Image 1 (cartoon, rainbow, N blue to C red):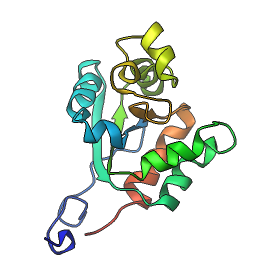
Image 2 (cartoon, rainbow, N blue to C red):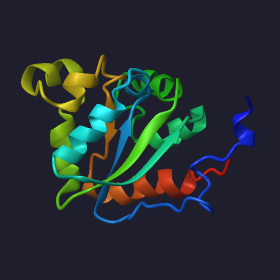
Image 3 (spheres, rainbow, N blue to C red):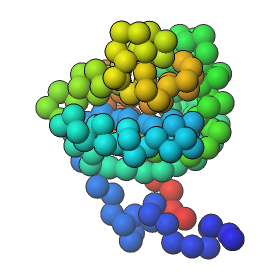
Image 4 (spheres, rainbow, N blue to C red):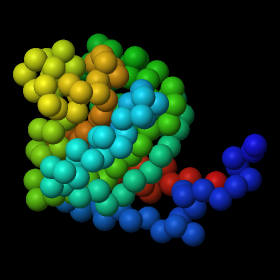
Length: 163
């Protein structure tokens, strides 16, 4: 079956974008967590914690898109190339998340970047539950409040593909 010949939800002419682009953060459910069937549990955890999901999109990133999105970590994280490989392995689910203090709330729910550390000090965090390595740590979330809108706009406007 040729997927390109069928309607899809990224056709914003038929399905308008719901992202608000203010007081928001980006959460990416990484490919391994999507393939393992954990996306629903992650989304439920976010919503149960009092945060609101106002935009959702599934995208299979290209290598160049992945590099663009994670460029700030190049030269900073020793496993940067592993992150890129993970992010292009299969589709990711991108969420615009909102709350009064969304970046802090989302980072607290996600736990430390390091999966082993998360499992020891925050065993109920998303990364402790759904991460399997530092490059496959379950979720990516916005690090700084000032980056929330930029990251969300990148995904929901710049990567706005029409099928």
